[in-house]
Picture 1 (cartoon, one colour):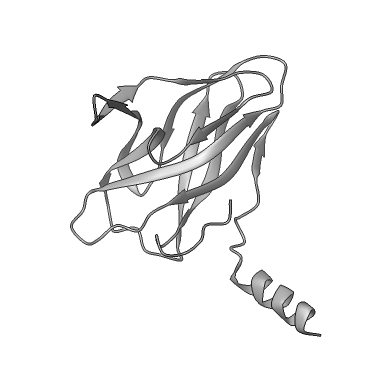
Picture 2: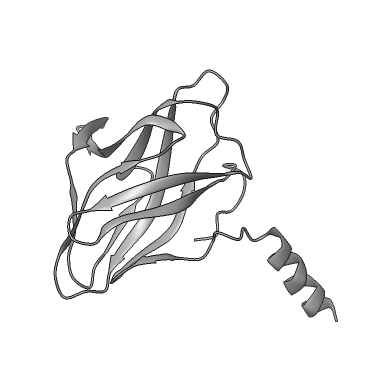
Amino acid sequence: MLRRSVLYAALLVAPAFAHPFELGKLVIGHPWSRPTPAGLAMGVAYLSITNNGAEPEVLTGASSPAAASVQIHETTISEGMARMRPLTEVTIAPGATVKIEPGGIHLMLVDLHAPLQPGRSVPLTLEFRHAGKLTVQLSVEDPGDAPMR
């Protein structure tokens, strides 16, 4: 009985959008963001992109009604210093998964219209060269919570 109660409780707190999103041969896994304090105009989005197709695919951009623009960036560490640079695209090789995650490639939500609040979701439209566009829901997760990845 205890096992069933624990499972039921886990299902109640699992966000409805924790499932993967699919576009043709692409699978977008666990899109999420961190909450932002009032007055902070920048947010960030993370997710994974798996290409189950036979040809490379390219993430060429993104947009969200929650921000004036969404930019693709990459953080690298060089000589002990973190540096961030913009990217124009991200290629996903056939059979590969690209992780858009903290400390690497990430999506910057620029000029947020309102703070990102824990427990809420934010629409994010991903634009791919061949597959087209797909709108996913970013789960805004508190840093203290264990994200469902």
